[in-house]
Amino acid sequence: MKRLFLSEIIRVLNLKFKGKDTAINYVGDSILKMNDNTLVFHLDKAVEFDFEKFNRLKNCYVVTDQPLLTSMKVSENRIYYVDNVHKAYDKFIEYYRSLFIIPVIAVTGTVGKTTTKEMIAQILKHKHKVVHTYNSRNALRFNHDYLMQIDDETEYGVFETGITHPGHIITECHFFRPSIGIITKIGIDHLNGCGNLNNYIRAKAEMLTGLNYMGVLIINNDDDHIRKIDFYRFYGKIITFGIKRNADFRAKNIIYSQKGMKLTLIHNNKQYRVFVPGYGEHNVMNALAALACLTMLGKDLEESIEYLKSFKHIRSHVEFHKGINGSTIIDDTWSSNPTSLESALKVLNARGKNKKKIAVIGKINYLGRYEGESHKKIDKMFVKYGVDYLITVDKATRVICDSAIQEGMNKKNVIYLKDKKDVRKVLMDLLDNDSIVLFKISMLDQSLANHTFYNPPKLTVYKELANQTTKVFAQIETVSGLNNIE
Image (cartoon, rainbow, N blue to C red; front, side):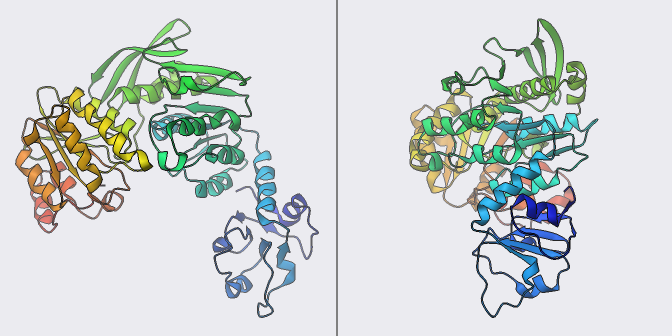
């Protein structure tokens, strides 16, 4: 955070300064973040104010709209009272962001936003200081600390703008004030919070509002849901990317190669050879969006293409591993929705030619009352992409199995398991040199996982399948069932 003086912050809040001035090293959005030389806004009123800690700290100040009790002995010079602490906090956020004239990119989409954000940030980091969303931690509660990471040395900001409900993108853009917005793809997700698909599309379209209907908007021209958005009132520049339709950044001649995708990029009537680390057309689309953004930032396209070659994916994004008996494991367990599932199945189909293709599917979250309907639509994918064995665990996935059989899958190869412990045995019997298995499970799915992928020292059946050493097998014998697949 850029160091500010207390008097400066108090002036922004239109309050009367009292006491002596002091340097503030951090401004917090919770009283749990109290420390020396900090000012915190008392937004979380349900959290008990630790006055003993407050009195021990040096140069700690609180902005609140909550009255004190007579038993609370604190220095009045260290507490500033306002009529509405949330409005006061908004004033500070607006002021702090206004201190920095830097390009900020906001990325949203049902799928691809994390990878696209990472591509942009990693390429920019070759020459610049960048503040960006960590992994996919894009919930509203993280916005404050991301903003506080911006200081005088920051040259770019790259942030994911995820949603669970309408209004979230507007709120996030209020924090970050982006000049470039990206919509990667609009599929089916968060229907529990948005109510229906049209509301979800409108929630993603809030990116236009977040850009104040100006700046640069980069969109997927192949996406039919994005094309439903009314761009008439957008007065900025719209840049398109895609594969199927004409676009400002278009890919053709796409092929699977060793450890990634090769393609020809067409931009301004010129052709460029591009390598994208990681498999799948969805990664091609992510790369197109990232390269479009970097070009709009004034970066040399050929240089960006060269930097893209060294891109590193966040773990569990269509990760390939060697499994036992010569099998292949695809770990795509970071998140799961119908759109990302189809992307993963396309990779399974492409990399599993002439192999036994197995899909292990967990519950797909955030579908609300559309869960059953969405699961039935999902089943067509397993037939379309040639899945030989479908394994599911979770009551909600039973309908997936039933519908998959109705769509034409062999009943003997559709396996619904009531107990996750049985998955291990089933997989051990199926895997051989001609097998490839996709794990497509959300990090929120507790039927097949707890948190092992986020706690590397623990061992899982996934690791059992993905590691052939005797030492690992000896350790895995202590693990019962398919625990912690994520």
